[in-house]
Length: 176
Image (cartoon, rainbow, N blue to C red; front, side, top):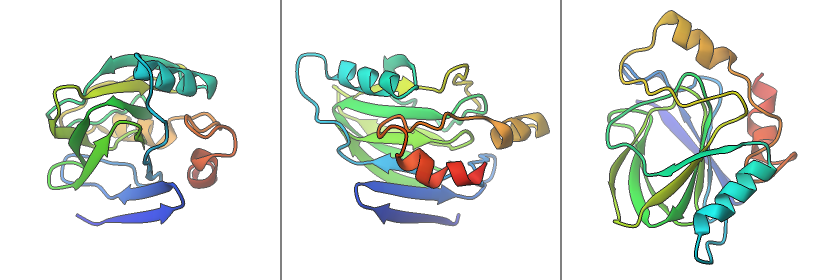
């Protein structure tokens, strides 16, 4: 599998090509925000929820990351690591292994394969999507309709972490 990692200040991007049955996203990179949110207080997940919500990405859930490879065709997904740490695999089987810990944020464009390879007992993630989008759980090769959905799925101009002039503006907006 061919993928590339780019680092820009406090933001990193990863581009993935199709990987066997996992479509990934041929146009939009995964955006990684290491240490994006200073985790503090009794309810650190609330800090992620407030940040995402303020930037137009309504939070939908608090949980972990599934231990099986999957992707979404009906929603771009932002994952805020509220507590703990984990080893995630992005891009599908044999993909890129990434260590994440509290304070990190990942923005996965629709089609991006992901799963957890293992996590601490206190691992907690806040998940959010742009308005009107959701996380369908896809575990097999996409249909033509699902590929079309990935290709045409809208996203807000506002970055879920950095706001109007953030990484989404820089890395995604020009790809419309």
